[in-house]
Image (cartoon, rainbow, N blue to C red; front, side, top):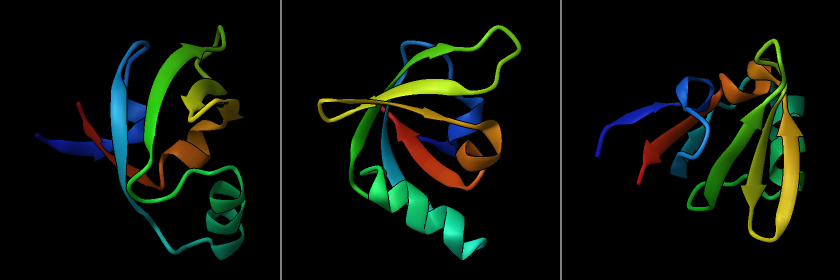
Length: 78
């Protein structure tokens, strides 16, 4: 399957995290703390009216992430 950036995903998409860019490091640390790590599966639930932030389901958790955060996450759609 093709890889893309999480911010390009659509509602309802299911993805597996392939990679998280190392820059900026504080952002990578925050995503790891939320459970968004390489190999984890996530589902795009919805976008705010202006497209930012987006809500994703990862494991049993619902997480809102901003487009700037989604831009550093490479995913593979399932």
